[in-house]
Image (cartoon, rainbow, N blue to C red; front, side, top):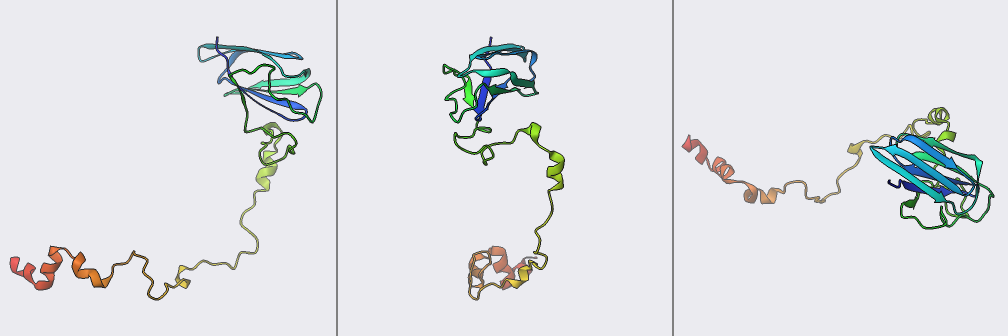
Length: 185
């Protein structure tokens, strides 16, 4: 029997929990006031765990959903409080980790940059409609590289210097200049 990796985050009134088990089948997920019982099959392995939660939740208002890569749940805390839970469970478990994608520090507003919106609450049609193009008022800005002149005497190292031409020429160039090449033909 294997334990799934469990990621969790919270707000004042809910706990988000994600069990990382891809393509789960035969899922059993029992939500009680102080415990979660979970079992499933995935990739030929059996997964199961029993979690004794840090504080009571309201099982009737809590829910879970099986998706392709994981099983997600939203657990409604029995009492919404300004004090956050210090952990998901009463005892530390090696397979329980913080979900940094959803984590919000205690005292921060839920809509801060670190918090991801709940994808079930997102209105994608509205988002696409609001995706405009261009920036207003910049029509007259034309970029013409010929307007940029090289400062006099500037040497950026990408052009050959005429002073060093003889040093850079190979033996064939020296022959051409002296006329030796024609004699060899």
